[in-house]
Image (tube, rainbow, N blue to C red):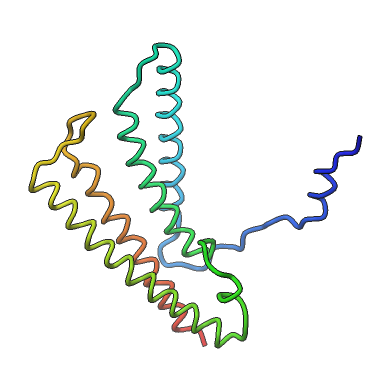
Length: 174
């Protein structure tokens, strides 16, 4: 019996991501943060699965930390995805038409994204400050919730700076 999957995949071109654009601040920070966060998330989840299987109990703290790590993973990977143009977008609009049209769409999308992440940074900062002021504690571990939430405006600010750089480079292109 022939391997239909191998024949079908042979017809498809291999996806090779484009090289990173020249940046003043390389993407190594976001890449390493993404890798380390995903590794920690996998280890914590595996430990919880093993403990649940062997003891029928759960490490409640793993779920709390896993949620935080998923948010960190999303924000750190989003930052590098924006720069590498691997984020979700409507390619028919983003890549179609002439160069002037593509530039206008890139400027419009970059401006909207930048405004969104500026607002998100401000709101996440206010949330972390509120959690600090009110002394909220996490339900499973009992640690202050601002320990988790203080990193969210920082990561959102990193995305904001990356988007500002993308917008500046797009504006300077002729």
